[in-house]
Amino acid sequence: MRNMDAVFKALADPSRRKLLDQLYAHNGQTLNELCEYLDMTRQAVTKHLTLLEAANLVVVVWHGREKLHYLNAVPIQEIYDRWLSKYERPQLDALSQLKRNLEG
Image (cartoon, rainbow, N blue to C red):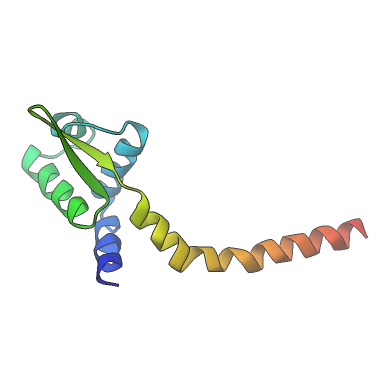
């Protein structure tokens, strides 16, 4: 549960969500590339990336002298599996029942 708490904390900030969106759009970016999307200092972006790494939402891979950042969607999938997917089933069942009623 502690890991999920870190993920929720990381996702709570709009700047961190924007970083994740940028990595989703183009995975494997450097700090300089990611800084282009946010109106903040490199130091502030680094702090956000550190928190995302701690939550295991971002994985760093060194490619020579470059530090590349990659999105790790597994923690988000775990949140979906644990918290969101169970709420979809009743809605899908209701839509199926509505369709049957309208066709019958």
